[in-house]
Image 1 (cartoon, rainbow, N blue to C red):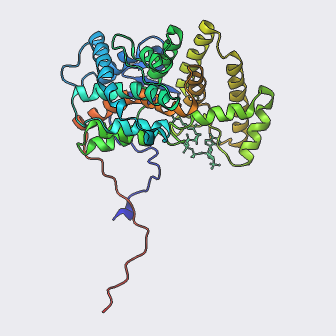
Image 2: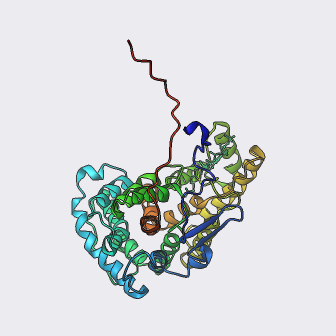
Length: 369
Ligand code: ACO
């Protein structure tokens, strides 16, 4: 009888998996990825190295980091052939949906080659989608380059070590984050012994919602709407009066500041130092952050609402020339590393995930005599 089982709508405080991959400590604002605080990885390790760290122990014959990076480059070259499937119909979709459709075409499986193709795919598909939307041909990958560097080059046809370093820091910061909604979706699929492609497609589907990975695009709309630092308080008060949520604030787990916000703020500051881009935008974001936190504390004194990862994600990705509609697919590019690791962990150690529901619908009428 499910009436006797306590209902947990949203599954808050339910532990549904044991993982060696990452720990989200919401009370202290800490994110640890395989034993390393996220701040010590972002800006210090490449995305390839962090993907390797996440996947260690989950694949037979995982090559050591330099060879892993090379294998990922070769996977980018392999999946590039799939960009031929980008047709007019796919280009009418949002970039995240076009990306999901292209990823779904990849063969399903559990091996390392499937995993590498899936990790490579978003970094190849997104630039191709964005260029096709602008009437431009896709640029082929260069397997010898770093993943972030190559992704940016395939988008802009330009080289910039400073911009590539900023994207690398973003991809590392967003690579894994405990049992968030998209990772849970990926693990549910893996728990049925379906393949990695199915898990990643499920992850993209869950990620794109505005309560999860779909927030940074609306953050740009919010910053544009606010316009100037002086306007921040009035704009925020009016938005909250309308019952709107402030994009880039609040989190289900963090009760203090999201540590990824600071990792990304650092990356934005390094970018400003090296390229002198964005100083006005950063000042506006800081003013919005200060005003929003102050107002949210006054309005919701019982709910600790602070900045989350999406505010500085939006700033960083905007500086890298990604349009707002591409922010969620860039997030997926990073999180695919985590989804694959979690799917493998679930497959190797977990059970079929099958919770129960409590029926509250109408009782069947007794059979007519
Ligand atoms: N702006 C205004 N009020 C908020 C916000 C916000 N951003 N976030 C939460 N609240 C309020 C809610 O209205 C609610 O108030 P109430 O109790 O008076 O009804 C209270 O705080 C608690 O809200 P919940 O919905 O219980 O918070 P939950 O933990 O479910 O939500 C979420 C977390 C979805 C992230 C929420 O904070 C939100 O909608 N934020 C804006 C969207 C966003 O930034 N998403 C990205 C999250 S980070 C990530 O997934 C990568």
